[in-house]
Image 1: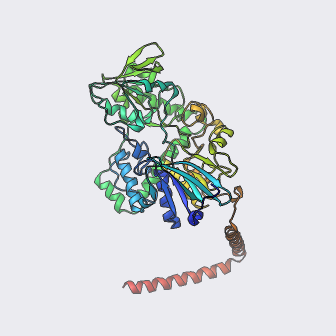
Image 2: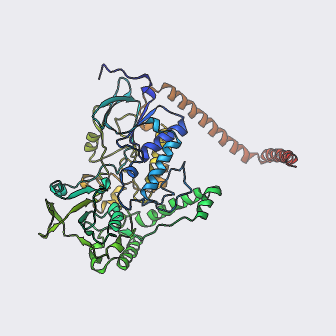
Image 3: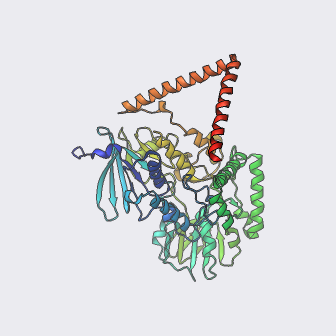
Length: 533
């Protein structure tokens, strides 16, 4: 490595890992805000879109209102409905990549294997491997992990025997569309967001016999997916600020849900009242024989909120059965339950979610430690405001530790982080009350996924860097500009304070100045009127 020649443009190059939501949003910000074109995006897949490229299971859709689940710089007035499906979301991000001419900056079918900070040259040395096994080395001053939190499918250890299964099996994140489920005995393992979306779809085929296994029941919010009429789309397109106002309203509504229901301890009055309403909804829509096993015994908000897009209704079908006996193992012919029953199967579908706390490549910082070693020393993934890690210069993690909010749009969170990057109570919270992917160590350790507050608080926290928390090397010009800026702010602030004091003590002078300004404004209006007429 010491003999490698570092390209001259490496000092200003930005290397982005992943062409999903975070990576594309970062590239757009670099072009829009900084007019910066010296960046490269390395993407493991063959197209942009991240989770909306990879996940193609039946019924795959956003569970966040789409007008909020969009970039603030590129709102789309033509969304057909409130929670759109995967093809529309994938197309949205592809259109943005074309709009901002990003494809020339993307290297597809390439995996970032490792990155190491080189103190002598003040750049990262990044190793990239293509799908055909070829390796190359890239250098850049700034490294951005835009791999997101839902990129690595979770294969629980107790299901390791699935590799012995003689039938077809796959994870919902890698849906095998070549497998025909008609006239098959199918096991669906898991009951999170993905399973709740695809199970009602595959259950529409009456010859498909489905058994769903799960460990913990989930809280389901009542079904709602609004369709936008052509008139509403016209209003969003042609009446200024209407769409912006609507988007802000959606955010406010979710913030109120957090403030009034989710915030605080697990047994607040409003939370309990809300859970009673959800329990009533469950009993009105799910089969009576499943009421007990479907009712959660933990507080609402502990796990991600799930929209009922037909899940409860699908449980009434004669070809759908629930089984919460617990799984001992997956064997060659099916699943052995903890009650000793062997259930023969033809297909197994894992809807077991993702490893949300996993950084899918190795990074070494200025002191030789890796990010994973640092996480281990801290008892779980830890980062400065979920965005930067001590000892890793210019390394930014989008959707890093403790940045997910659990009640809204990850795109908003990542935009806040990106703007922060460009400018440069967990003890009582409900997430301590249960096992979930918000926590490390298979859901039982340190809370690493969730942010303990509202979106507004997250935005306010990251609105400006606290430069006293950073060490800056090779930044003489930057320090000089910052010092000048401080002086200017101080002078302006002192001037404004002095002017205020003077105005209080000399009101007649202020009246005289305001009178002159009013007279000048009247003259200006008269001149404008003469042009108009």
